[in-house]
View 1: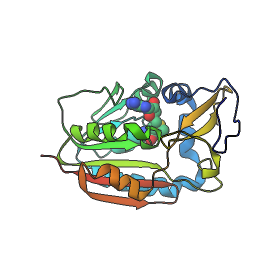
View 2: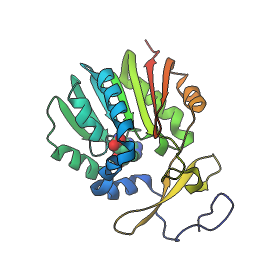
View 3: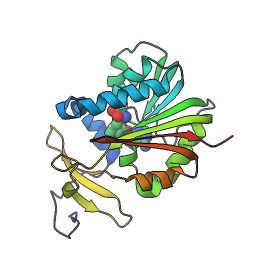
View 4: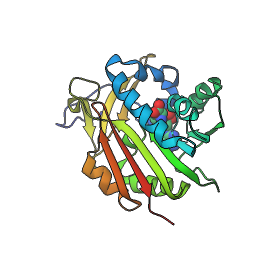
Length: 232
Ligand SMILES: C[S@@+](CC[C@H](N)C(=O)[O-])C[C@H]1O[C@@H](n2cnc3c(N)ncnc32)[C@H](O)[C@@H]1O
């Protein structure tokens, strides 16, 4: 049995805690997240920002999911290579038959290898699903894929009261401070999903080994961070 923050029992015993399996099984219903009317204004702000940032650039998109952002970035970028660990996600993205120089690859970001260096790396809604103890490794890897002075951009969820990202809906905190939420898919399967909500100071601290120029933007539902890689 999984324990909640106060040691209270929480949820069924057959709780799947595997984040990769959760997204594998969620692929067909994933894009529902983009239809919440309340989030449309933030999504437009974010889309405009990223389209400005990635115009004419070669972009590596990490954990692209069903390609919701890929579709938008591809309209302006010189090229997009979008990777995701789940074939089920990539299959939906490929079906979109996007215009432009777009390619997809099934790959784990912790194993992905390429000799290419990109003008920019985009990471949509993946930071929150990375264990705190793996973040430094992830950030160092991502930095290794950008050209000197290249851009690294993240977007992820703010905790918002009364929404599914309400901090009161955290079901478990582990010994490293990672937070988890209960989620149920349409097939009724129950999942305990890693979902961290970093604040600005934490994000800046984590990125400071690879970037000095860091811009943090707080929208109502999302935080966005754009930084410029320091490496030569
Ligand atoms: C919240 S979804 C975000 C999808 C997409 N970036 C978006 O914003 O619409 C998280 C994605 O991360 C992928 N993922 C999880 N762990 C991964 C890993 N280690 N390497 C690559 N992709 C991963 C999942 O398959 C899922 O598609």
